[in-house]
Image (cartoon, rainbow, N blue to C red; front, side, top):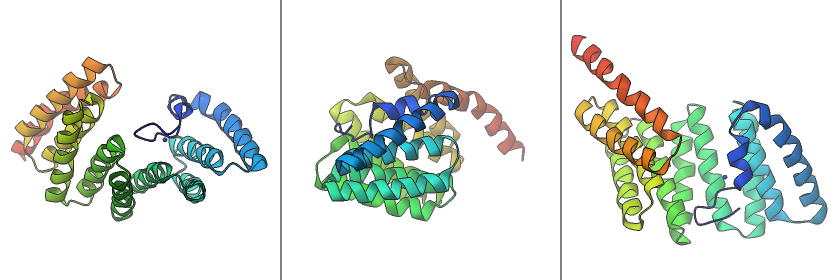
Length: 225
């Protein structure tokens, strides 16, 4: 996921996940970049290339392959002394475990990412890790813990004025409310998330809108049952 405050792996990752058509070409470019990094003996570059290759594999639903690439990237970030990179990769490993249906592994890796983010005072990374940890705890049906992390992420995002991270946390709170059959709370959280997404123009808006559209039907079915 270049290391800015949240430590995203680099802008190429955003391109990588747009369409499956571009992913193949990006894999070729990233593989060449990896070879050059190895040749030059630059562990940070090597870690970045490996992390981005992991994102490509994840986009193609090759989750086990992604985990292997992320694990190699993690070792290289540690070799380079990049704690921010280490936190980002731990979060990515957690995300992949969640996609594989391994919530406990996701909780473990995202907890470690959160610890590093706090130790290094990477505030955006801290918010992202808390939101990610909330999702993992939700998947494990540990609702009270999930609520705590989501609410902490939302408070911190609002404190620093990060509407993107606030929208992510609100979306998670909507999912949590739905899982507990608190439909009014889910609607309120998703409505707020949708409005933020529209304001800042991020693709999550379409996903949240679809959840809101589905919510009435879900509520009717639950009550009928």
